[in-house]
Amino acid sequence: MLVPTVIPSAITAISNLAIQLGPMIAKYAPTVIKVAGDNLPRLVKVLEVISIASDVLMPNEKADELGAKAIAADKTPEDFDQINAYIEYLRNDVKVDEATLSQDPIDVLVRQSVGAVVLLKGLNKELGSDVSLPFVNKLSELGIGGKVVLEIIKTYLGSELNQDEIKAYIDGELTLDKTKQHSDNLLTAYQTANPSMTQQEAEQAVMKDF
Image (cartoon, rainbow, N blue to C red; front, side, top):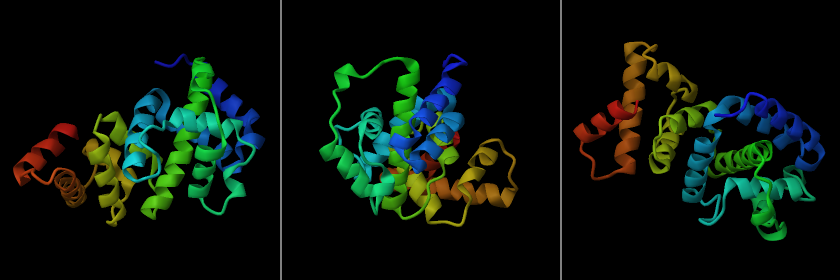
């Protein structure tokens, strides 16, 4: 549980780093903190898993380290034509000593939120569409594994369904027709992530998780 003063302090810290981080990160990192709140560590973990699966991150890389490098870097995303090139720059040209990084909750929150923004932007580029932050955050809150989350994201991006309706779906606030569309989408994602799953097993998994 985050101390109430940590979130506003982290947002102020990001504002103070705006010139170093560049407009895009400075704008979206506070939004990540506000949307995720106490769930940020789980959101970051899921983003790391799906970023590795999508070749945005290397298996040994972490969002926290990526955030630290973005803070230490001389360049910002705006100096590059594509986010992938910026991530490559952070990977190859910016060095940080993880052992010396501050473990103060505010500093950790800042690094994680900055890293999360870079990963989200990298995923958007890799998947060819915008992944909704509230959508991924809600899936991470439910404790769904990264492999399944990635397939859910891909299935939603390939459909006409609104990702941000997922909360209303979970809360039972959608029409029967819309509810069925979301359920079918989730079934497809679970079976794609787990090809050996039967229809019945997929239905049970969706009911359990959602």
